[in-house]
Image 1 (cartoon, rainbow, N blue to C red):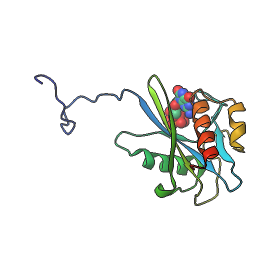
Image 2 (cartoon, rainbow, N blue to C red):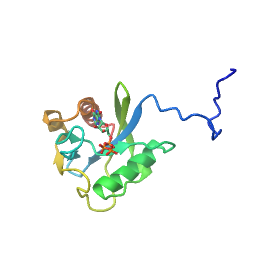
Image 3 (tube, rainbow, N blue to C red):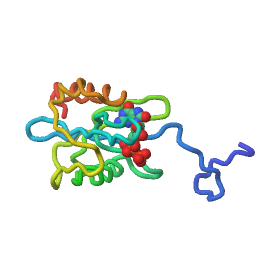
Image 4 (cartoon, protein in one colour):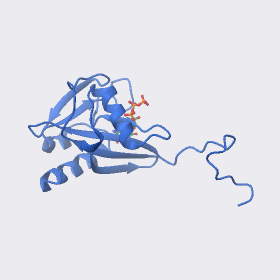
Length: 150
Ligand SMILES: Nc1nc2c([nH]c(=O)n2[C@@H]2O[C@H](COP(=O)(O)OP(=O)(O)OP(=O)(O)O)[C@@H](O)[C@H]2O)c(=O)[nH]1
């Protein structure tokens, strides 16, 4: 179409911001079936609320690579790509969160960036104070656990 360049390889092409921020999050499950949540730092948006650990996908980054990077940064553990099971998603205007589940990791889980960490019975997670999209994510996690799908 005249006047419109769709050539993303053109260095002179304008940088178009994504329609939505893409965030990846992890339901890390221990051998007692508990899920790890972290409390957001008090000085950030949604400070003090509990969330599935994770963070924003960087431009050009694969979501699962972003998740593995974020989990290393936030919890200090390594998760293998093959151990990540897609678990659900939630969206609001301008934001999409993809949730994965994982039962195996390498290293000791530590609270490196959050205010604190907790291990919770998945059935108790909806009672926590969380940012809005973490509620539908928690519900999808519970459903998949109930069916044995993950
Ligand atoms: N988990 C979660 N995050 C949400 C929701 N709504 C919403 O705006 N967010 C925002 O989505 C972003 C998630 O990215 P992040 O985990 O990397 O956040 P952050 O503040 O640590 O990142 P930053 O310091 O790099 O900006 C945060 O700014 C968080 O406040 C929600 O319902 N659930």
